[in-house]
Length: 172
Image (tube, rainbow, N blue to C red; front, side, top):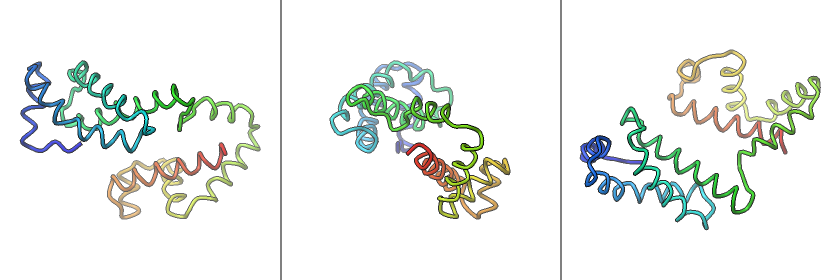
């Protein structure tokens, strides 16, 4: 979410409990919440996700301890609501943990190792490299970024995409 410097006093006042500032913050946040929901939700769930995110924002703003984390917190609220609505509406969950657990329980150790090696080998080199550095060499994100001449956000993004691709390979 893109709160500009001019909006920070509104956020701060709303965080301290000013009802007028909270109403203004809700108006400022709604377009960004809607844009994010349109990317994260089924199209039929966008309005419900926006409404629920605004409700959570109005009720739980005091839970945000560091105002710099506000945007990330708010986007997580929207993402969580989109997942909940998708599960309810279509029995759809892009991060189906039950399916992953079921698959994992059905694997023997040797088969699991072979599948993991195959999944890693199926990844493009850039993605395989970041997973190996993080999960096997146990490097921090900052160390990976320095090693690969990436920014920290780029390293995080690449790791996230690499894990998604490996997961899709394993569970498919």
